[in-house]
Structure formats: C-alpha cells, structure tokens
Length: 419
Ligand code: MLT
Image (cartoon, rainbow, N blue to C red; front, side, top):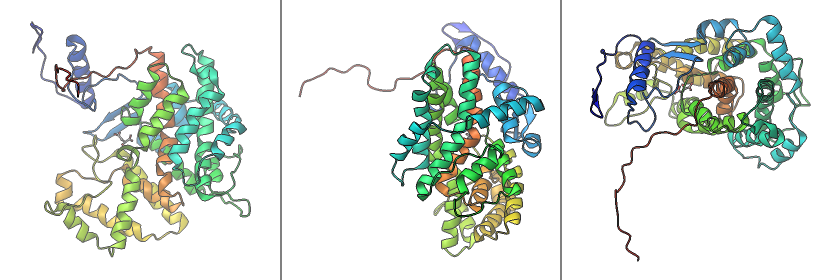
C-alpha cells in the first residue's frame, strides 16, 4: 500500500475474526488509514474489552465467558456485575450489588409528576428515554466530567434500580392502570414482572419458569458489542455527557425499528400469516420468489453468518414458558413451521438464513402478556448493563471525544447569485 508517498507492506489478513480485527486495528494505527463507510461498518473504530463476538463461528462471550454458560447458570444481576465491573461477583459482592439496587428502586415523586403529563397513548420508549434523561436534573452532580469512582458507582446503581420501575410505569400508563411500587423482597426480574402485572384487586402469582425465562432473555440481550445504540451511548458519553443522558440517547437509538424493532416485526409477520389463513408453505414460496418477494422476519443476522448463539438458548426458554403456562398459541405453530423450513430447506440453509434471537423472544413476551409496544422496552432493560459498561469503559480509558470522519461529496465551490 502506498499512502502519502510512503509505502507499507502487510501480510494477507487472515485467521479468526478476532485476529483479523487486531490486524486491521494495527494497520489503521500505523497508516491512519480509514475506510469510507457511512455506518462505521468494518472500521474497527472502537477498542473494547467487554464483549467478544465472532459472527463466522457464532460465538458470543461477555468478558471471556461463553453466553451459553452465563444464560444457563447465572442471574441477570450477576451478568450485569460482570459486564460493568469486569469480573464475576463473589456471593458477598453480588449480595451488596443487589442490596444497593433494591435501596434505589423508588423514583422521586417529582419525576412522577413529569410522568403524569404523558398521554396514555404515549409510546413506552418515548416516556422511558425522556424520564431517564430527566434523572440528570434530579441528580445534577451526574453531569460532572470529574466524577469520583464512588459517584459513578452510585449513578450506575440508581440507573440499574430505577429503569425497571420507569419501564413498568410506561406499561401501566398505556393500560390506564394504577402504578405499583417496587417489591424489594423479589429478585430483579420477578420485581419487574410484579410491577408490570400486579393489579390491586387480583392476587399476582409469580411463575418461576417465567422469571427464569426473563432472566435468560435479559442476559442474552445484555451486550452485543458495537451496534447502533451502544456506539451512540459511547459517542454521546465521549463528550462527557452524563450516564443518564448517554443511556437516554441509546434508548432512542434502540427505539428505531431497524435496531430494536425486529422481534415486534416477527410477531406482526406471524399474525399476518395467521390472518391470511396460516398456510406457511405459501409464504415460504413467496420468500424465494424474486418476482413477488416476501421478507421473512427473524431470519439471518447482519453479523452472524451461522446460527445466532442466542437463538438456541431462547428457543429452549420459549418451549419451557409455553409448556409451563399451558399455552397453545396458533402463532407458535406458524413459527415452528417457518423454523423447520429455515433449518431444512436448502434455499434457507445455503443462504444461512437461520432463525435469530428476535425470532423467539417475541413469542415469549407475547406468551407472558407483554404487548408488542413494550418489546423494545424489554430490550432496553436487558441492554442496560452493556450500555453502562461501555460508557464506563470509555470514561475510564479517557477516550477522546468522538468525531466521525466525513467524506464530503457535495458541490465544491459555487457562486451565490441573489434571487
Ligand atoms: C443486538 O443485539 O444489538 C442486535 O443483534 C443488533 C446488532 O448487534 O447489530
């Protein structure tokens, strides 16, 4: 490669995705070389020690631990601690983390006054992002660029504690139901379900299978390295914006249907197939037809060229929840037929269009009564520790303010002629 008159030679970049990423980072460091890509794709612009993802092999690890082991054996708070602080907690550390969170689950009554001003039809994500940003006003020290470690920890705890409370409020607002105060005797996921579904005139039974499934779902969504919302959190935070302001920006990015809306689209697609009579073979044929194409939602993934490792775990959780709740949802039959086609039909197998995480998560949410408008809120609840970890890592590394490179493509020099 010759750049600015200097010549550089590099070995052919090969090996695992991880090795390639390191080689590309070295290349860029030595040459100042950038790739022209409006979505930052393949630029390797962020160095991070949080989540490792290999799309070719279908590997996802948080801080080195395989996602499969974490999802099966740990709780969401354990994984949140791992992502945020870098190591798995001891029992004493986990107890302290959990106690601290339960102390902060209540939200200031003046935030409630802002909440009361939202119309009942407000989209839950509009309320969530607004109120998370509003926390900056209630904890003004959070905007300081020189926060002590203790202060950062306090903001982290507050955010982990209050986001589920506000998230449950958004649902109650849509339903026109009274709000529930948090129950600190319950674990993180169970308390969230209680705040969502408990109603004063009815006894609320907490189903352990559902709690376990929610824990898994939150773990599987806890981080996914750089994507639209996570790089937004880092970019906004790189200006020394507060944790609340940065996460609020991430929530807005996630709200965009191309990012957080995939599982909603899956359920809507299943419902559309059902309304049409439920004949999946017709839609599978349409999906293959170049002249009359139909996009099957929830298949394939931008980074995973093989099976999305999260999908297998979530499929099992979906089966467990539906069995435990005794639900025979006709949408599930449609989903199973589509899944079968994707796993066996050569058209899908050759194109590696395997069901992804979004294909199954919507089915679980629907089974436990979470409306589709709340699906992105559930995603935000899970992604929160990842956003926090990414924000914290960026601050601790004292990274410079982000400034995406631009390649100007407009007119070069024009003469102004008055009208
Ligand atoms: C995610 O979990 O963030 C999604 O799969 C989107 C992505 O990583 O691009």
